[in-house]
Length: 256
Image (cartoon, rainbow, N blue to C red):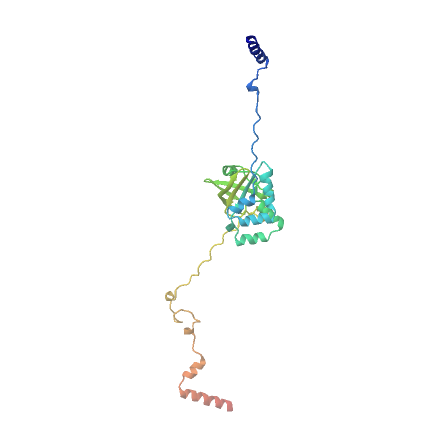
């Protein structure tokens, strides 16, 4: 019985020594794949923020939202979107947009996005780069960025505005609120319309300060107080004798 136990132990020792040594360092585990970003629904994002209903309506009508949606979810570049609030669409701006062709209107709203994800700090650094191309494409459809004491300003050649808040800033989509609708130079030109000066108030002196004259208190020669009395008034104010003589003289002239 003792020999059997010793044989089993010896067999196990011989078997373990014959197995190849396993180097723990030689085992490499593949890293777990990074989780895919959640699907970004721009319609949902813009519906609950803002309010951006006017902008959302325009990009849905022109089908621009589909371009933005594909860029955000189907590319690694991401998307940066500049969105004006509803009150930025003044009556004058809506009138200008209504005069555009369908292609021009689409270009205006493509102009509100960059085909790359930019954080707010990235946008501040763009002031050192120069004009940045937008989705509208072309040199005249680029945006200029300026960092003014930490606030990012945008200039299109027609519109000058600034970023007032960050609505959503998680890769792959950054959405920033701007104060005005961005109107591209390619469509609207380069001259920013000046703000009209207020009309001057009429400079009318009070009646008490007007100089008096021999033509009346107001000095106006056409005033009723300065108009000469009519001839009929002279006749009626004459004495009865003069009136009789005038009638007699007129009758004598008639008979002669």
